[in-house]
Image 1 (cartoon, each protein chain N blue to C red):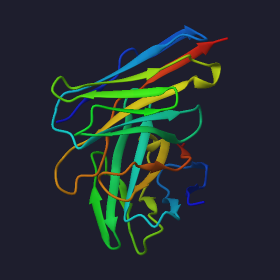
Image 2 (image 1 turned 180 degrees about the horizontal axis):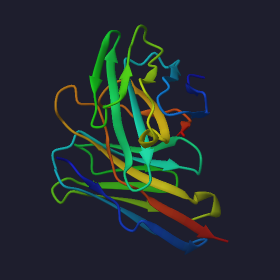
Image 3 (image 1 turned 90 degrees about the vertical axis):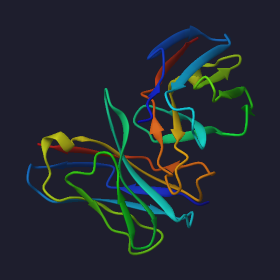
Image 4 (image 1 turned 45 degrees about the horizontal axis):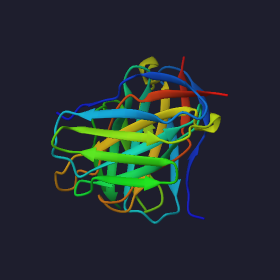
Length: 112
Length: 114
């Protein structure tokens, strides 16, 4: 069955380090998204991509970057991790605007 | 800017009851609306997707309605079970071309008591 996976599932890092979170989907969807989920803020969009070589900023993109070199993967990079980036990160994908978004299991990131 | 609100933030009911979860949004111009379920420590599972041209969608014991003109959606759960305990999130998709990103409410945490 097609699926969307994230790794690692848990990560602890130190302030200032570069961190990359992986997202891999086997749905062959063109559209992929990164969200963060925080108490009191709900899910907020970080970056999204509509296809290979396409990336766009979401509402909370500062301090994050993404690259899309193939259809299956959209890695999220924290250039210099900050304590404010402690959160649960979700990756999602969809086929089209009319279609549902499918979410990965999440990565819990702690920045000390 | 689209804003999505879910009230109440938490709800506790005895098993077997029928219940309604509410979702409101400030801009009635939406492409579609989705209801998700999230279990503790887990990702989101899509429950129902309602396109802007539809009034409701049903899946098993779940029924979701959409009233765009009033900016409201409800999720009806019939004959609730302890396994329905989870956080329920609604999300709307703006209609702008290429804007496939979702705007989420903060969710209703539902507890079904045996």
